[in-house]
Image (tube, rainbow, N blue to C red; front, side):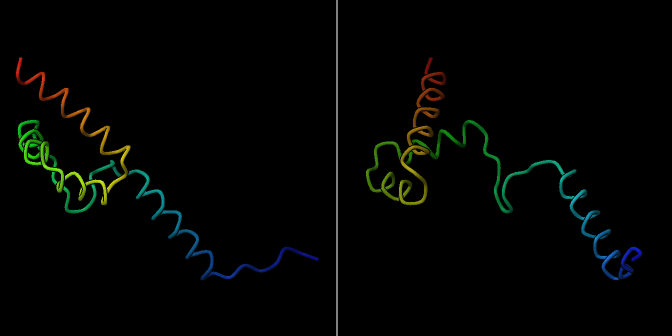
Length: 85
């Protein structure tokens, strides 16, 4: 038996999927839609608002993991110490 006849529509869909995938993979990584990059000063300002606020930390931990919050606090404390030198 010969090769099974291919469906032209399937070939078109395959080509389009390949092109779309290649285009998406070639795009530079960016922050999530609607996210805004903050300056270090803005990051510190935000951190200062929650630094000594147990309720704010509780909310942050609900939204993110404890590990992520600990890493965030460590990063911000280092940045804070550098700013205060």
